[in-house]
Length: 269
Ligand SMILES: O=P(O)(O)OC[C@@H](O)[C@@H](O)c1c[nH]c2ccccc12
Image 1 (tube, protein in one colour):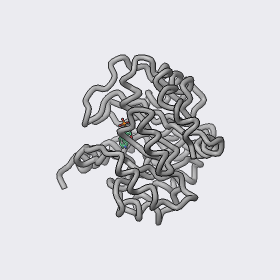
Image 2 (spheres, protein in one colour; image 1 turned 30 degrees about the vertical axis):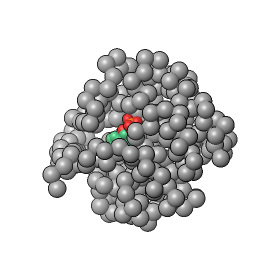
Image 3 (tube, rainbow, N blue to C red; image 1 turned 60 degrees about the horizontal axis):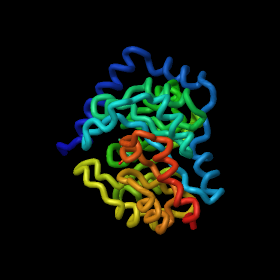
Image 4 (cartoon, rainbow, N blue to C red; image 1 turned 60 degrees about the vertical axis):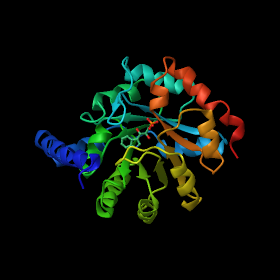
């Protein structure tokens, strides 16, 4: 398997080992338990849905492997405030540097500038990263089923639970969804982008969403560009959305966020 995911997995494992040299795992765990309690990420989404409004997880992303540089003028604190002002429910902040030009500081700055709960958007393999994420202020982690074994996923989820963090479990096809549903995961992200080919198609969400039991929350991820996309996904029962690039490309992010969500207010079934 010689694709971007295995490349990322390889450098992540090196990053993790290097990080453990700087701060050992026991110390990192102690630090994670010492930070103030997380903000409720999934509960914020549930509340939004209970109000019959769409929940937006708004992403702060400077660059990506498929798109290159997405946004020149990049101030995570200002972007977080704009997202909150525009009506976002949660934030997602890239912390991976080699592929996404992310940084832990961006997560800290963004979360510090608003009152929204925040997801550490990164490739997680080791419980160490979960503790680390918490020390940076993250309230939720991402587990990408395409990247991890069931055993690794379970360990990440168990660690997050121990420190009261939420988990977004990401799937891209039927097999990954079946694995995810066997895990204790209430937040299921359906990534419309194939991380191997970078092809993005909202039909992925349409196909997989009906397979998710009603007690779980489905989040449609990637390739959502306008209110019509939101309406299309709502038509198959999806009311939570993770959006990055299309908002990051706007000069006025608050206004773009408002516009993306506005027609949806009346459409939620
Ligand atoms: O920028 P977009 O197309 O709106 O997509 C956001 C988000 O879904 C995407 O960044 C993403 C989804 N899963 C990931 C896993 C790793 C890194 C990035 C991602």
